[in-house]
Length: 330
Image (cartoon, rainbow, N blue to C red; front, top):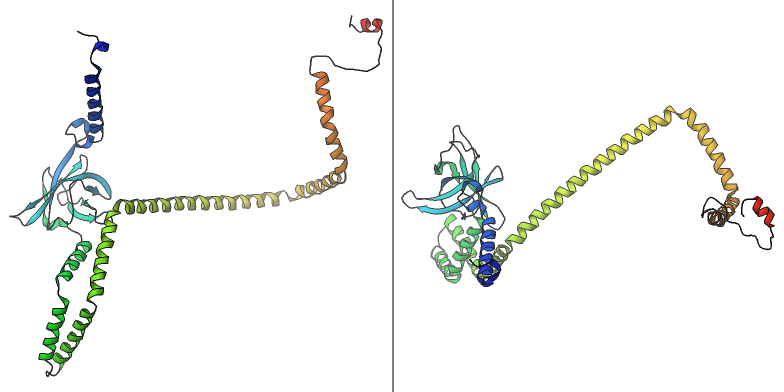
């Protein structure tokens, strides 16, 4: 068997890169690996009148907390319903009367499945929540898109001509019918005269909705950041409120302390006033003393800093040898 260092390094490098790639792929998809060590889930499904924009990988929430995800959406033709399959983490108790609702997660159409546990017992694995206990949201975005498509297909000029003809036919009619048709004719002429503006408005609406849809992630992050800012402001508000309350209590305690020791504080303050007056009258002398203290301290440190003796230098001073020996310097 060849030693490791004598083998071809290219297959070893390729194998190592593949192993690292598989390891990274597995680490980012631990919840999707069907092994008990990576967590277990329980599968259910719910019946809805329509899909309402729910899609695979959308969140499943209970009381606003994510507990699972949608695994699939299929059409049940015989039952005239849409089946939404989902899975939730084990340990989530769902009663026999649990309700399900498709709700709007963001302003731009992202959905999630909201579960409301109810009833006694426990929802069995694989059970279906029936139509009677499910709801779907109102799709205003789809309604606008359908309105735009419908308006685009309407020939407003022909519609106005038809309404004018109808009004002329009933021109000699009396009573409420004539008034209604006259108003209808005026309405048709108004719509016809604003055909270009109406088309431009609807085109602009499509552009706005498309732009918002393209900026879904940015708007979601913006809303999240705004919520974070409000939380920080609220936290700072509580801190400031606590600081003011503590300051108020401190002031109250200081007031009580001063009142209780008023007899001792008055003479103390009088003496302090006298001392400050004396210091103020001698401020010039104090300045000179401080200015002279610096050189004195420096020379003193130089003379005594070399040992337990005193270094002194005196110019033109002659000391006899007998005196030095008497002082112990020989």
